[in-house]
Length: 60
Image (tube, rainbow, N blue to C red; front, side, top):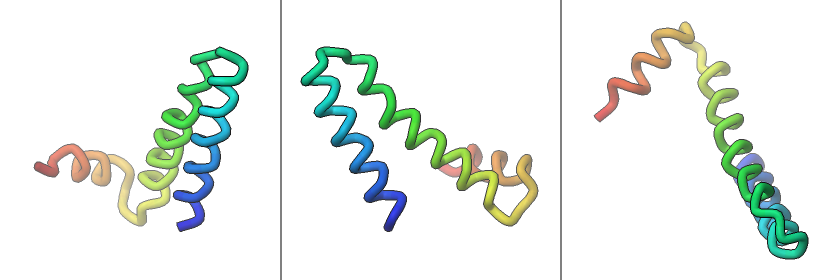
C-alpha cells in the first residue's frame, strides 16, 4: 500500500509542477517511477530472473 501512495504523491507533485512551470517533460516521471517499481518487483521475485520474465510474457 505504501508504494501505491508514494507513486500517487509523485504523480500529483509532477502534475502540479508540470502545469505550474509549463514543462510537460515532468509528466514522464510518474511513468518512469511505475516502470522502476515494476523492474524492482520482478527482480525481487523469488524465482530465477529469466523464468520470471518468461512467465510474465506467457500470460494471456
